Length: 415
Image 1 (tube, rainbow, N blue to C red):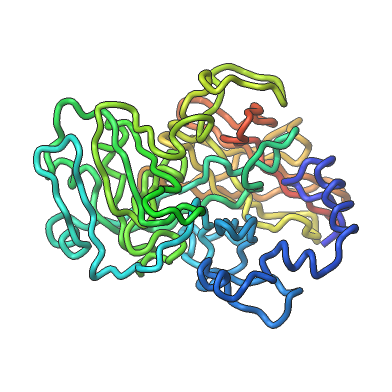
Image 2 (cartoon, rainbow, N blue to C red):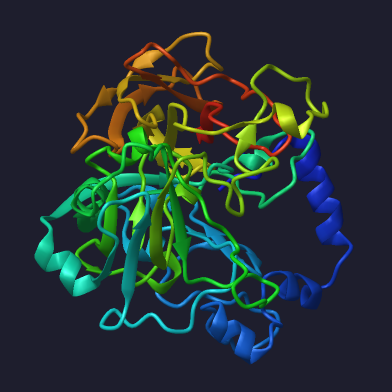
């Protein structure tokens, strides 16, 4: 690969990072990668002990992920490793808010359905399997902060670049079937979800996150109470043995290590539902502008987006012809077209776009580009949804760095 500024990092941020790395030793870099964690903590967070303090710790059952931080463990997948139409379990990103539970035994796991329901229930995973229809769907889960590292000035939080997204095949039972079996009361307007993960403080009973969705969204037939991913058990870092999958909305709505769902007559006010958590201004703001907390509005559907997964950025292109491929998705909507540019958006050519395998799955796009001359090129992808909304060149800045759906590009050199 030729030497170039990574396409996902703003120029100033890139040089700041370069100066930082130059000023620290390899042992410090190893520590930042999680390499000097005590053995007990490595195991608790799914990190496999390595041979030396200078080696980055791999994550058990995962392949190629980049660790952002270890407490809680968060890791993303480089775009070129997301080329599969169905994201392999080992390449599905990790987004944790607290400490993963120690006990993930599917045989003893119980899920409570309560609150504003006629018939509160306590269900084992086996009862979910036998009492309700089991279905499988390909569903996109994307962190609301995916792309946060591309905001300037920087926004606080995990500095996701592009890889906090995946489209696995999830198997479970429909959330709506379970709620209807419990009997939804007329006064219910919102769900609330709870998991078995622990708060980072270790305080018993203190939840790290408890999100919910409006009842209208909860009744979408593609929401799942899932107990399998890609035909096998859930990965421990992806919510084993039971989780919610609420596609099209921020991944935080898809509660992991699921133990309780209850219905409420108000917007849920659990941890990570208030303040500025998963909220954006309802009006445009200048980069760096302060926004009063009371003005922030909770995020619902995610925006239209695309990701180039082939080739990997930095490739040399022989013969000046290049196949470009990737995925596009659009929250609760559907992608209607994807266009590709090799001249910074001066001209665009349409890509072939596959139909959705099922609603809320991403869609494969591909095309061939013929470069007119040898040289350096940036290849851009732009998705448009069925309502005519397209990706922008620059996403609207917001204080928490959410919903960055700016155009993705890769850099190549034709020879």
